Image (cartoon, rainbow, N blue to C red; front, side):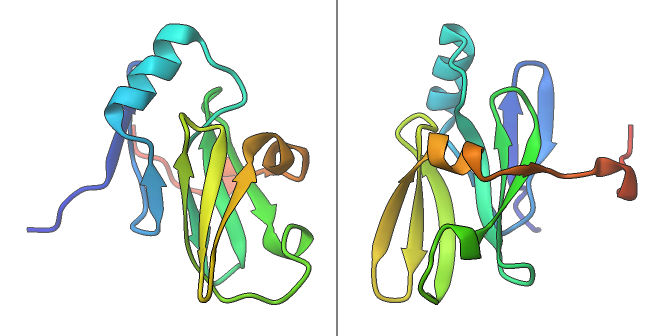
Amino acid sequence: MKRRNVVFFDDIEIELPSYMHSLPQEELDFIKRTYAEDTILACGYHAKTNKLIYIDSSKNILEVQLESLFKQRFSILSAAPINTGKRVEFHLSDAIVEVDSTDLFSMSESIDLSQFCIDM
């Protein structure tokens, strides 16, 4: 049986795609208790589009075109939120790079969810 990649925040349960990683549940609970803003709850590198897709603490789904972040061409393997969502760790083919979430927020665009079918 396939393991579900699920994150719980407030009263919402979100099933993440396989390429996304969330903060540990303890850190998600801490963010909720402290009303932390500008934090990344879950993120992942989407290889087909070369974008970082992420969910922030306001429950927005956003994307960052990674050419604007990495000027050189790198082979990105994965990305995951760290440090209670204040940073994202990118695993590259030859290095690990951490990026501050405020830098990512400044380069982000919202994803238009009207193109998706959402079951309720």
